[in-house]
Image 1 (cartoon, rainbow, N blue to C red):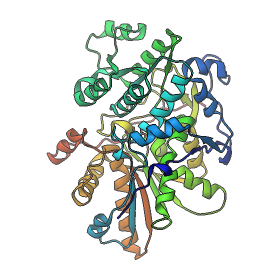
Image 2: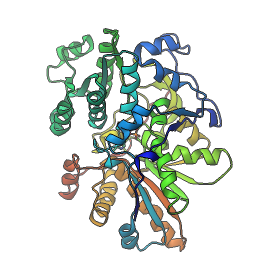
Image 3: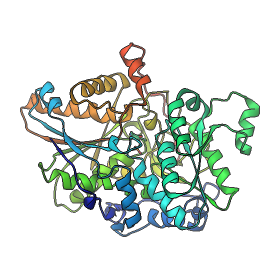
Image 4: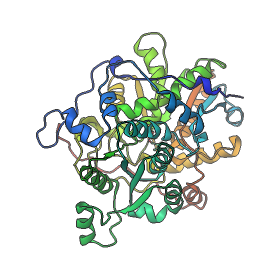
Length: 441
Ligand SMILES: *Cc1c(COP(=O)(O)O)cnc(C)c1O
């Protein structure tokens, strides 16, 4: 029914997909000059080792022993389950397996990169990491990483989420982080927005702007990002490397599925398998799932765009809806992002990964079915993957074909019950994709 690995099976290296991609990732551009950003400039924002990893051409990068011990402490290796009850209720010949990242102590995959980022910052003598958080999962993971490694953590959280998600805020504070509703009085950007409107609801874009301004004022501080960047996706490959080992106890999958906000949990599970496809050793169908309200992969344009909505970060080449695209307030807060990891963008361009999009009502319907038969309440983000898996299993039934499906259950939904309540009480809205602005390359 499930495979649990001992501590000794925590991967000793991360897999870096950069040298194996069918084409190189275009360099990030300085928004002021439109020239590639210098590593020196990046090192003022990110810890040095992370800038190195971001551009590394090494296929494998060693995971330091102290970090592997911390991975163990927070729940790695995570279990891999077979969803036999889901197979039965769908009456499908498909066999369904899932890697359960909700089993980490912060309840999602985000701790895998949070610990790595805090570890390298601490080693460099950095004292404080600053970040923003939307739904709160990333802020929670970084807060725990700071507590375990001995770094101060400051989190800017959009004021609307700060007020609506009191439990995630409390969790961050339990781990000792400073949490500010954004816009805040701490920064010039924040004060400017507060002058306009003292009750400004804030946004992820404003929170990023505040975090970066904060970091640039303190030489002992660095910025931390929870998705999109190459090094973040690489840290997440512990998921797929473990899953590969665990699937040896069962069988080789045919289809691999994950939900996508910036792309990190999907990449974490899929990239170690993508490697085999790029080397011509095996064939898999990869399905990346997004919400119809933020259809970056299915409707976005592949071009240079800012990573944040305020237009302060370097420009990166990716599938994007435009940095000013307004993502409606769906419950899958972790998927409300206008852009996409550059490496995943390239795999989609080469038809190696197939994107699909769903509305939130059908996603919650799938999540409730899953919870009833398997017991785990999926995070609304992860529920997108569950929906795609159910569709694939029903397709297998129609075709009378045995297939093996593996998906990433990126987190549990125990702090997202508001979304479930809205679904059960018929208050959930579907949002049609908005007009996508014309983007210039
Ligand atoms: C943040 C989050 C996501 C989306 O981010 P990715 O970088 O695309 O993985 C998905 N699931 C959960 C549970 C999250 O917390």
